[in-house]
Each structure stands twice: as structure tokens, then as C-alpha cells.
Image 1 (cartoon, rainbow, N blue to C red):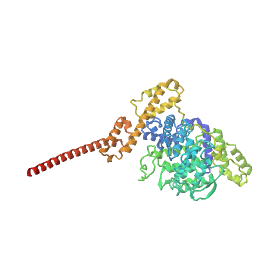
Image 2: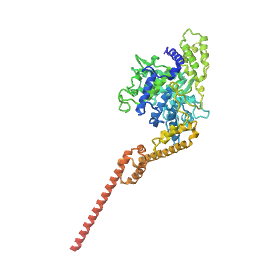
Image 3: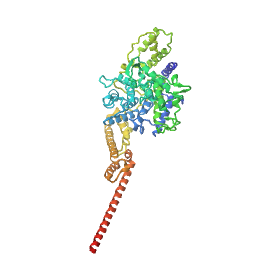
Image 4: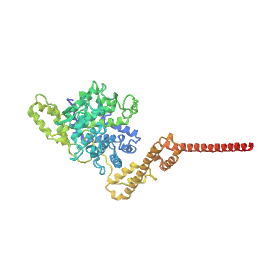
Length: 611
């Protein structure tokens, strides 16, 4: 840990000198972080059956936009600045949000993290989550979430990711907001366990929750502000700095680290837990290879993570199969494991190269300020018993020259604060929680690490040909293409020359949404009227025929989006057989009654003859 600041200074100096080549170069060494990051992206393209030369953010991957399978990869891509089609992702996710907002629960009835994940992905792609049409995801998902459902309705997750999202651009919280930044912080602090960690279930510390809590609190680690709150598991009233709380959580994580350098969840060693710890450490300016607390013998956290990489470039969840977790295949790369390792390695790369922390999406500081911060950290690290009060005051003056909202990047300020306290130097520093009121809106920043690739701002004949290539009669299959084209046409500087084509796109979009709505209605009717299929009888004939008629009117592609569509098609045969059996039964019944009548008539006739 002692050499990490000098090491960072060297890295930043080299970056400043070599920046043009660093910004545009791909890695030369096969074991470099960028090479591993690119391997993960290549694996994900292969997993999605996307051509190696094509963007990951295209079909079919964009079909996942708006859910956990589709939003974390854009975060990793944007934070490393990987060349991709960010505009396509923004177009699709914007449309996804607007359409979901038309429903009663909007993005979710309980999970505030839907707002948080999507907001972070939008920022990573260079978008503004406060301006999705007239929708403000930051307001609705964080400081005003309580107007509908508590931010913590889903547990500690809501509080943690609410704070991460709120601080992602140092968003201002309006005076009339339902909840303040400080109140969100105090909710997280109140959930700390006696062992120093955090847990979703509030019984004993969990690796992932403890690491995520550190990620949320990391921007406040260097603040001298004290927070008073009631600890929920003990009822004790406590007053602590966030640095104290984070140090306790770090100590717990160090205790939880296994002899192999990794971490477990419910006694299940896995790479995702280790990835969350890596993000937590790097958010505090800690390199895992430089901190003795996170090295176990010859094993480091980074060694553990890299041991989970497969030959195809992806990462496995675990080394042994857990029957309670079907995704824990030890010989097959896992999408969630790979995405978490992706953004964890990106977080480490950003630390090594002097960029902002993983979830700080503001524009990068000027290189001169970064250099001054590194020099100050080096001077702070050199503080010893011979450092006098005058020298400490000079360091404090340098520190206070930095904008308050940037001081969290002086990663070792706490050492200066402790030395000043020993020499009775007063510290009257403003609270970070009050200083983090910077932006009300604005787009996130895509990292300038690779050569920037921007979509053309003018509509071309090739774009018009893409519209002509959309097959009719329409299906929902090209919906993502249409949404992306609409966004591209709307943003183009020659939009006025193509009003007819834009109107055509909007017509296509409206028609596709009608088809999608019909698919959803059929799904609802299937569940309500026909499920379970094996219990259908002849009484269900009219319902089956009516739903099948609507089903058959759909294209083969759209039929595949109907729930249990193969069973639905088989239900026609099942009903026909039931009706046929019923008719045969009726026919046999009629024959039997007829025979019975004939027999009775004959008996009656014989009796008359005897009489």
C-alpha cells in the first residue's frame, strides 16, 4: 500500500507524456488488462452470434436493452471507451423506457434498481438519464422514489444503488425532494452489521453487499463529516465518519477473503463476488496488488479473478457445479460472470491510468489538476514524525485549493488529517455531502481510451436503403432497426430533406407496436383462458378457435413470441379429438337409446299379444 501512490504518479506522468498513443493504441502485451477486456467483448459477440467486426450494441444484443442482461455490458464498454454503436443503444433504451412508462408501474413496482441500472448504462453510453423525453430517471428513481414506493423497498440494494446513481454526476437534490442525499447515506450506514459488513438479509456479512456498500460510500471516504444514526440490527445510536465505517467494512472483507485470494457467497467461491470487491477497492484508490490486506500469501484478488477465464475469453461463475444454481457450469463461460469481470477490470484500468472512478461519469479533470493531486498524494505519503506543523499546513492549503467535489480523489487525505490532528491543527472542512450538488442534468462521458468513433450526423442514401429493405407485411422482427433509424434521422442535420422517410419509419413503429400489443393480449388470453393446456375440454373449443385464429394471423416470427405457442397449436388437435370423442359418445348414446326404445316397444308388443 505504501508504494501505490508513487506508482500512480509514475503511471499518470507516463500517460501525460504518451497520451496520444495511449488513447488510440490497443495493448501490446497479451496479458494486459485491455487485452483481457477485449477478449470478454469478443466472447460476448460470439455468444450473441454477432460478427466479430460488428458492434456488440446491435441486434440481437439490443433486444436485451432495459434488463440486467442488456445494460451492464454497455456500462463496461462506455467506461473503457470501446468503439461501439452507443447511439443505437441509447435509441433503443430510450424507446424502452418511454414505452414502459406508459404502464402503471413504469419500470417496476418494487425495484428502484431498474432506474439505477438503466441510468448508469445511459450515462456510460454518453446519454442523459434526466432527459428521456420528459422523463427524469434520476428524480423518479432516487430522491423522489419514495413518492410511490420506498427507495429501500427491495432492501439495501435500493439504498446502495440509489446513492451510486445520485453521485454518478453529483446530481443536485431539489429542496422539495422526498429524500435528501444525507438521508440516503444514513439509511445505508444504519444497515451496517456488528461485524462491520453489510448483508441483504441482515444476519451476517455478505461479500457482494459489503463491496457494493463500499462502492456507494467511497466518494465520502476522505470527508471529515460525521453522521449520526440508529443502527438497525442493534438499535444503538452511533456517530461515525464514513471513513471509519468503510475501514470496518474493508477489515471484514479482508477476513472473508479465502486462502486463494478470492471470495465466496454462501460458501460458494465465485468470480462475481471477487469482481465486486475489485470495484470497491479501486473506487477507494486501492490497487489490489498493492494492499497487504488483500493478499493471502502468494495469492492476490486479481490472480483469483483471472483464474476463472476460459479459453474462449469469457469467464465462468464458479469452478464447481452447484445444483441450486443452474448457471454455475464450471466448463462454460457465463454472461453475468463475464460482464461483472468486464467492468471490474475496466474499473482497475481506470485507476491505473488516472481516470475518474468507475461510477463517476463527469468529464475528466484537466491533466494539470490530476498531476497536482498525484504530487500531493506523494507528499502526504511521505509524512513522518519529523514533518512539522508548517509543512502539514502547506499540504492542507494545497488540498483546499482543489474544488470540494474533487477532493475525494486525494485518496490518502486521511493520513494528512490524522497528522494534523496530532499537532492540534484545526480542520474546518466542508461536508462532501453538501458539496456534491453540482449538476441537474447532462450527458455522461464515454472514456477517450480508444480512437473515438461517432455515427455520421447526416442521412445518406444507404440509410434510405435500410428503410426500403424492411420487409412487408410488417413483423416485430426489425423493430430495433426502426427505432435506431428514427433516432438517427431525428438527430441528423439534414433531417428536413427526409421527412417522408421519417414519417414512414414512425408508421412502421406504430404498426409494429400494435402487433406487439396483440401478442401480449394473446399471451394474457392464453394464460387466462387456456392454461394449463392438458386440462382443456370440448367446452373450451370456442376459446381455442378464437385465439388460434388470432395466432395464425401473426407472422411465424411473431408466433414464436406467444407463450407456449407449440402447446397452443397442439391444443386445436386436443380439442378436435375431445369434440370427436364427445360426438362419438353422443352417437353411441343415441344408438343405445334407440335400441332401448326398440327393445321396449317389442316387449310392449309381446305383452299385448299375450293379453
